[in-house]
Image: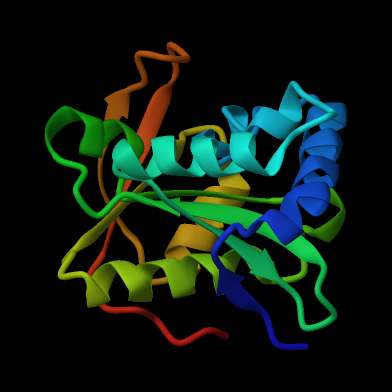
Length: 176
């Protein structure tokens, strides 16, 4: 099947809510961070206006959110790119954050989505692309490395108290 990145239009609201319920039930932190602020997480009677306001606020903060859709229309995950991220925030958060719904993991979707996000960032002049992950998140580290990421450092994460690994992706690697 062929996957694609799409803008988070209103028509995906219910699927986004499903994805968030699945992530919440797993007990894991919701990624990307933009989804933690999604109004459908707190409001079951969400209006189109609230949805659009949320997206506008994310965009004002420099976040460009995309959903990964499978060919059959199922929402598999989300990625937020931040081409303007600089300084210490860049070292902590990187140029993008991503997450795949738990029921769709281990199928190569994270590599596919991150590869597409890297391409979008590079088209916007970002080179190298900085991607970070928690030192304990081995699955994310493997995803980043499969996309051509090379670890260039490690930094304390002020939000979690843990440590983040910092990777650079200079040239997109062909998917295996």
